[in-house]
Image (cartoon, rainbow, N blue to C red; front, side, top):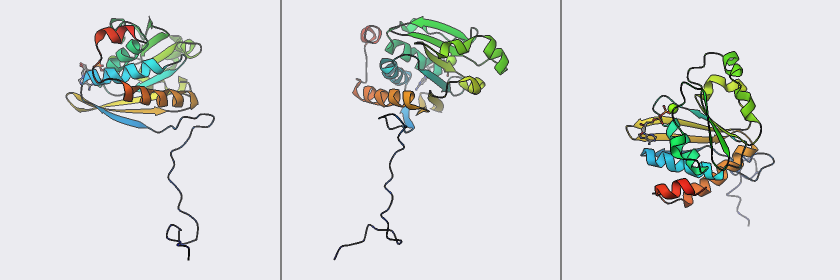
Length: 200
Ligand SMILES: Nc1ncnc2c1ncn2[C@@H]1O[C@H](COP(=O)(O)OP(=O)(O)O)[C@@H](O)[C@H]1O
Ligand SMILES: [Mg+2]
């Protein structure tokens, strides 16, 4: 006699818990949360992300002051092959551009007070073409962000420790995130400065 142990009371098989798959993409898109215990680890994550970008991606960064948003962007820039010194805290300039194997527009919307003000700075022009945009305080202009984007939320856990959650909101960002996870797993824990700058 066949066992029906795995059947529900109504005779159907229990639903397997499958992660959601983004339509049109092979990438499985799940929020990915990790704990960073040092700014070097945050940098390493940024580098893994920077290495996997293909151009045109938007990275929306959330989290309070000192959470590590700029530190992460510095890693992204390095992963793109740009010099780390190129990334500073752009709080007073809204947009700061640097060039690696792809152009990177680093934005900080902290001081933005309205969507109209944000639009007047011309940020929308960066959302088409090959430029990668990394936006600190992206919550100030949610309505202007492209629908398909990588969202990264950083939060303090302790003095040196941060929880970092990465999420993809569409197929392009889903693929990037899947590749980033692989690259991050394969990356050595300590990367020499030389490698950081020259490898893309
Ligand atoms: N795990 C960590 N990840 C990122 N930064 C960290 C971490 N631990 C300590 N820090 C420190 O926190 C600060 C983060 O600053 P910054 O990146 O400018 O934050 P934000 O841009 O979010 O305001 C830096 O001084 C950095 O050295
Ligand atoms: Mg910052």
